[in-house]
Length: 120
Image 1 (spheres, rainbow, N blue to C red):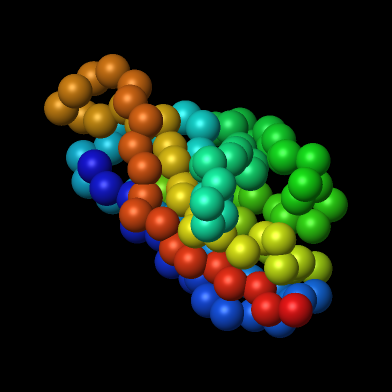
Image 2 (image 1 turned 180 degrees about the vertical axis):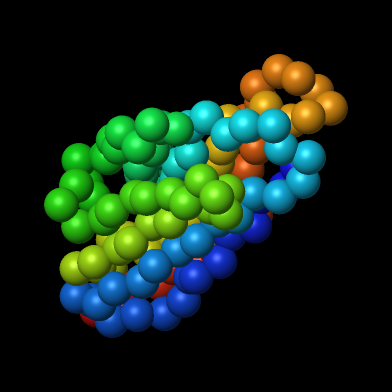
């Protein structure tokens, strides 16, 4: 099982970006999917989570600016980021709780990270 994140880049403050993260491999089912980020010199922090049923949760720092969504048919989670601020600059990582066909028990998988840089 692998997660592949994409969509990062350089954007001016106030702009928007959409991140994607696709899961692939021998997947039986996917439970929660989410996003974390790690700014330079800081610890990784949670950004948002979406459950298999579509319920969403956000960190206070991104609430009302970011929207998490998923396409279960494509095993993909998205993060729409609007009104970006310089403090949103970070490497963004996706994660997912996946039950693989081979293992049969849920495990957390991580994507490789995609860099988002917001200029002032």
